[in-house]
Length: 156
Image (cartoon, rainbow, N blue to C red; front, top):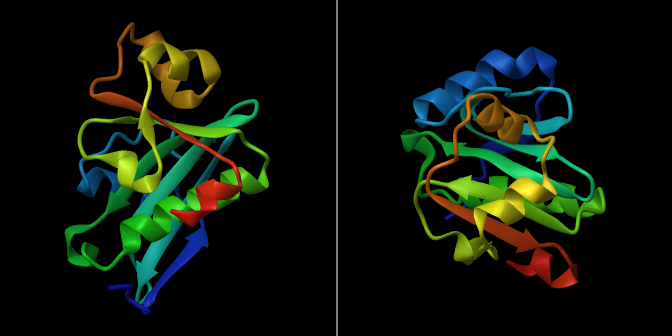
């Protein structure tokens, strides 16, 4: 069920603390939130932040970063709305795909398919999250995903 009281808006530099807090409360990493070359959105209900999501942009592709919905707003369709906001934005900028790292969940319901880690690292070598992993000599845990962006992609 979609909550009509929830609004999604583009986040600006002044929203870094809000984005960081929402993502931390959802157990997500916040390094490089709102860094140059990224776009983030905040979801609010009654003026209070209840969700956030971001994209790190590369050349023709983006990396989905932090789809976070606070427990009080879960089950309202907000996660899907946030993901679709990011998908539509990436399509509008002409991206051919969105990639992501996930430590849980089945993202195929959002049109994503599993891909090897090397694909994501090769497609977005300069994305802030990937640069951070490389600087720490770490590999992202979990599963790597890709969603092709074409006309059919907006239907999910």
